[in-house]
Length: 448
Image 1 (tube, rainbow, N blue to C red):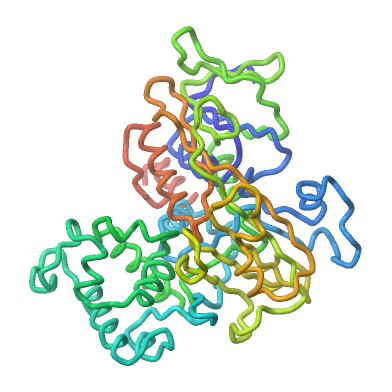
Image 2 (image 1 turned 90 degrees about the vertical axis):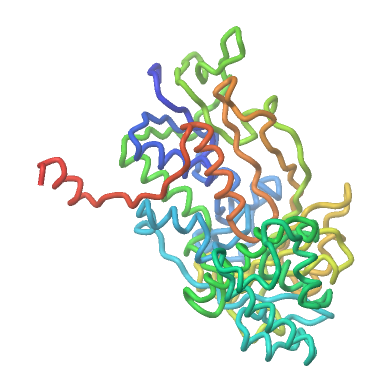
């Protein structure tokens, strides 16, 4: 361990493993350490014994739940959008060869006490019970506007400027009511609250386009999910790093992040050994003195012995409860999976709830509306976690800290963090270049 590296990475969360893999491919000498004896950090997928060890003080799981190996329970419940940035990284790095993805059957939204499919096309918008007759006509014009928009053709702009006009102004232009704004902003653009309405409309436009492109990729819903849990994602990038010379050390205590007299990072100490490096990347748990708290997130994992009612027998789904429908300041997300996704045994279903905490000590009450939709719950595991972001950009001390995983329904904010850290570490923008195959690399080495 007493060697010198270009980069030391602390923690095997998804953000850290993606960066480790990319930097290794680019020729950096990378050492990746984790105090845990398993991959994934906060993004791990736990078996039944690990779940009870974490949330039930090591209690023995009841035998009625079945075998350990039948469970892969995500600590951070999210789905991937088929057209989002992280999926593009998976494709370009060829990490997809280590994974098997399954489509999520339905994208749903809670409205006026009912669960409805999120309309994603003009035809679905016209048929949707979410809108009355005249509102459907207005929504149809709105979606036609989005599909017809061309940046270099003012004739498609209808007098609007997406980079200057607020989303609130765009909604008003088309006369869309609050209910329609809810499902557009929260179930398609996937915002956690209504703050987006006062900002320029460009980002909302981009989010809706990503959603509709993701639906068009596979149909049914915009979401995909790796079999055997999200913990497969960081492990896939860890394999990529190892192929390109990255060194991994699990169950390795990190006793000190060593700095010089000027506060600049110089190495990591574990026991009586110190590894030197030019830079360090890690999750907030390794750098409590270099982060600031930004909020808290509630997560609840529920085991069900029955499918969720009123979702047309879908074996998996994303259900969004917009803030205005449940008298909250933030949306609630439900991810719903079954045995077909290799996360639980047959006869069981896993529903995971996530949202931003708005009270100090009553998490179950905050997610009561979501719990009610699930019906009878066999087992529930509830946690409240602090959210952190780096207090500095790392330019002065070569310490680059990732952000905590938020309550959003997919990984776009994680991808944004990956790109941001990569830019700060390397000084370059992350360019997605397809990794050459082994045959191509061999041919290049032979000068063919």
